[in-house]
Image (spheres, rainbow, N blue to C red):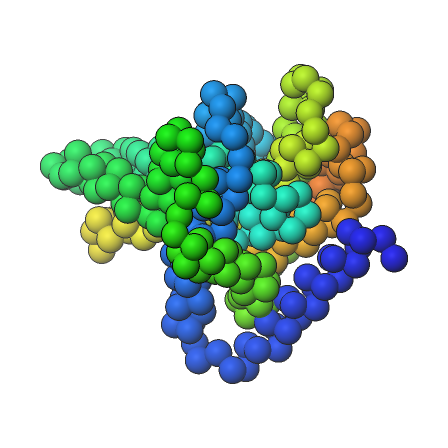
Length: 383
């Protein structure tokens, strides 16, 4: 059996085991505890080990800028395409998806598979790239959400209370620094600049960190299985949005392969799967914060219920896409594969948009014909 396919089957069995553990989970509080354990302990340890195994260079510092550029491309692609797929941009659903689509959460949905399929060096590069993504989801998307809030306040005639905005931005910056993953990256990069590596640590500390890092993949896969919730309401709509997001990400990856100079297969595959990471939680947090500022009868800015459903579906969707890509070995390291796959993903929302437009045109023509007949009848009666 193909080694990549065999590894994928092992991962799917771990996810299935987590799915069967759902009956043992007492509400979402238990899941939150597992998520905190992963993001605050196991993931930082994994990234710390991976970073201390690479040689730091100026080129690696360009990775955060590249990830930030990816976020911006996804944002403007969604802003341009979503209205053409039948979703009004200036609506609660449109604003909700415009915040969610360009956000990435590689910690739970991408990093475990990077370390297993592509190795520690690729994980270190992905962790550095995620710094740019965090700047986008924590700061830029917050500014976008607040801008929509103040604009809506002006339209509705309410007084926009802007004092405290600078303080909130300061708090966001501090939260960026307090996050364990970012602290670990800063410490690891500092050690590398001083010429230190993992062996420079005391042996007991090195052994503890390595053992924690070894827990990464099984615990994350079990968590994915435990967290999966299939909501029937809005499922088809959400799948269209996620297919659009995956398709745009694959097209960007394929275009980047054509533009950039030839790269190692591992880095090329990282370029393909990083944009396929699940939707980030932070846009939902910004929506909740904006919702708490609004008055009782103020116009709704975001659809928080839709945001929760997108978050719930995004993790399993991204997991399946990333595992499928990596199961094909180096096939997706060629530009043609992500370009073709991206076009196929975009077929689902495109076909729906075409059918919707045809239905609307038929309905419009039927109304016009009915109106014309009524005018003719009125004209005959008057004569």
